[in-house]
Amino acid sequence: MTPASRRRFWANSHAPDRRPSPSLDVNAMHTSDSNARLRAPTGQSSRRSFARAVLVAMRLAVIVPVLVPVFSLGLLSGSALGDDWLPAAEVTEPAQGLPVISGAEFESEQPARPVTSSGAGHTSGPLWTDLPERSAVPEPIVPEPESNAFYSGTDCGDECGWGWQVLPQGIVYKPYLAAAKESRLSTVLMKESEDGLLWDSTLGGRFGLLRFGPSDRPEGFQWDIDGAGMVRLDPAENMDVRAADFRAGTSLNWGYSAHRWRVGYYHLSSHTGDEFLLKNPNHNRLNFYRDAFYVGYSYYVNPDFRVYAELAWAFHVEYAEPFEFLFGFDWAPSYATGLRGAPFAALNVHLRQELDFSGNLALQAGWAWRGADAASGLFRTGLYYYNGGSPQGSFYADNEQSVGYGIWYDF
Image 1 (cartoon, rainbow, N blue to C red):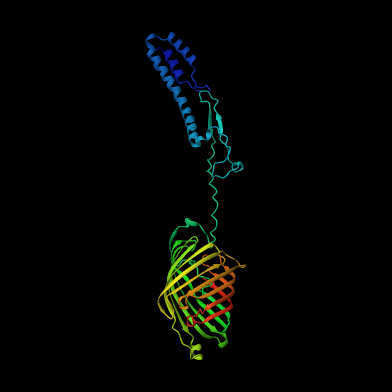
Image 2 (image 1 turned 90 degrees about the horizontal axis):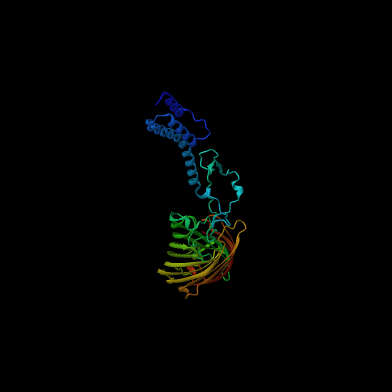
């Protein structure tokens, strides 16, 4: 290679490229090669081929670093957008289960701008830049479950989960409102048709020890204990104690939805008042008692109205007989009443073997209040009617017919 050709080769291979694009001028290259062949000796063709290869490689080295990031950005943008970069098809209705989102909620979003390259050597087509962050798909709007009116408190259904609870709130199997021998707090002032004015009061209650069930309502399995003292006073005789009955018991209860079951044991014993015995020395004192097992069932026709029945069998008795059967209904508010309250009514029929299953009938009606807490009891006040064998065991054979006014609180 002559010195002049070496200078031309060096100048062509190292000269800066001032053209606007890195595209190749094929015609110029062919012309240059033709002139070079006319000027250069024939023996130097291999060197010229090597020089052309080096020149092409250097130009590719300039073009490839520009094209690779451009195509990479296009591919990444398409994979990030999924099918969103394709022309959107017309949507006639929203997808099932998702709320309709208006365009106003996305006014702050900046849509992607397609940029078309005008430079030579660039692939024509949209290059996606200034891509916005993809918004998460809105969660479906799920309506809250309606409150279960059988129970107060928050009702989350089966989602609350079942578990063990020590000293749980609330009673799974609620006491019968008009039954005379339930453990509760009460006082009743009444007039008996033959004995005049009498005052019956009960001091007791029922509470749960252990439950396996949901945490938000009294349901599932529950172990209860109860106890009460039931005293009768004689206002006409300086409030002498006429008689007193004492009850203690325990029960296993099961409740789900509108159904309630209970099985249990109770002891009931009756005692005649000392003042009454002193004033009536000829009275035959009766040591009346029962140790009995019982099974009961309640069904809620609706949240405020239930019917029930219970059978008991006593294995240890004196003066009493083994079997007794009771049934009735309760109508009372199951919801939080506030100060206004709500009406209530209750009926109880108690058939007793020692009275040839004639038993007694009790009716109550009045006004009731219930709190919002799950452990809230039922406070009632109203009229009272009783007809049948005396509720006091010491006078079980005496027939009574009484009307009065009472106050009750049931746990």
